[in-house]
Length: 272
Length: 77
Image (cartoon, rainbow over all chains, first blue to last red):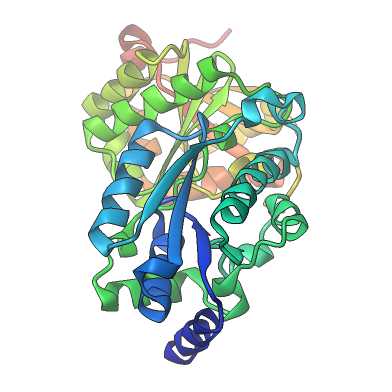
């Protein structure tokens, strides 16, 4: 693990400057910290591509983390919602989102004379169904964490050692991932999911949480270890009322518990 | 995928109810305190999910009903 980190730092030191696609998540926060150490603050720029497919809290959180670790940060809007190919929500939806993101960030890098654009893809991500990786390749975006072979668990462990506050942060993919493929991505649906998840957090649901949008039905996925408690009468009624308050007519709890990419499984894109 | 067969298997686990098939999602509606107690048991849930998988369902969710239905016994035709 430490040897991989040393390889990562050595690679970064060879770069004249880097622009980091920054989400404030575990991976990009860690990469930002190692890049700062290797290159110094003047040669690292973290850029947040602001998309409506993320909750507002994501961005305030990302700014706070950047400030805490000393990263210079820039926010730029992305416009994937203007692309009908993205809105149609095909199984490679992520490709169109990332193509927009990397196109915008490439432009920023060119304007500022920054040599390399990097992202926080880790070694585990390479094993998943990630159509967004194609867009990264097409825009010559490098993934130094994956290239160093660093896995998510290792990045969490190294982040903890460094005192980076994101070390235990749950993954938070975009809200569009809560919509089954073929269900068009609309601002209304995204905000519905956002309101439901926020309401559940306010109730005290901790750990992994997804509200999957099945039209009139919400399917709530939470960490399997949380289910015993949330199936008790008063708490399941509180869950129901919280999610109905976000505009769902029917509410259900997934008995398997949280599963990353569960809509991919539902659509046969990845294995059960 | 057969909702009726899944209903039968879930009932044998102490989860009597109706199963609505929505593509590869099985949506279970149970009634009565006993069924909810069973649903709150990790081993019962694991067995229920396994049955759903064997019958071709990718997901098994339990509906959170209105208060009146939550505590009412399940009435079957």
